[in-house]
Length: 247
Ligand code: SF4
Ligand code: F3S
Ligand code: FES
Image (cartoon, rainbow, N blue to C red; front, top):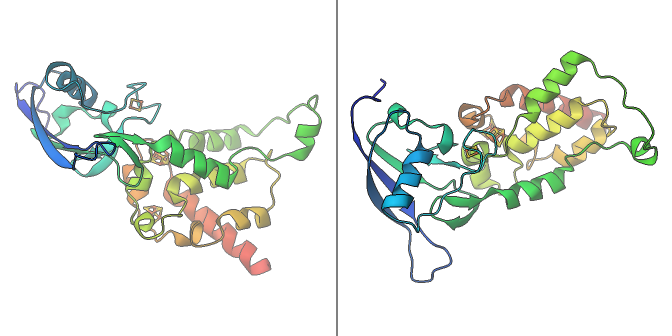
């Protein structure tokens, strides 16, 4: 139901905590905000910071679902706050930081550190020794359908929602998550990447990789970019099984 014209007073309960303050402890704090037409959680949080508590910490950069910095738990579900209209929510809203990532304070988390570690571990760049040796070498034209398929997977904004929505990571802290598996699927599809299936097997052919995924499906449910995570994980699992049987 669209509640945009109801002049509601929203009650926004926020999990507050400053991990750098030894005196502080995690606690909920509730703010009242008069809802405006077209209000997003970004606008509501700015309203709170401007008029009620300028110490409230949260992250926003693009406000357009592109940078991935505003991910948080909205009523317990990982999502992007800048793309969430308050009119789609009941008047009592609960906000908390995404779990599993380093907490900076309140709703602000450090996903960049986790993502950098993942990218380093999975070597998420094109591996082509010949291309590196010859800067004059022209890139071969790519089939447009394949380019589209790769572009689709490149739309990941590293927001961390799929990581927060996956039960496996709670049990296996080194699990690469749907974000990591999506990246590997992207590079495996790319004909410019010359890594062999065996080299990919080294990266994700274990329980911290594709065999750790228990098909819980939370990742695809919460991905704000609607990436086809399930089909790509299934594709990798088939590829890894074939490679594992050969070796
Ligand atoms: Fe976010 Fe989706 Fe990328 Fe996961 S796969 S980090 S949910 S955009
Ligand atoms: Fe986790 Fe998604 Fe697999 S939620 S267990 S990565 S299907
Ligand atoms: Fe960039 Fe929300 S502020 S995705």
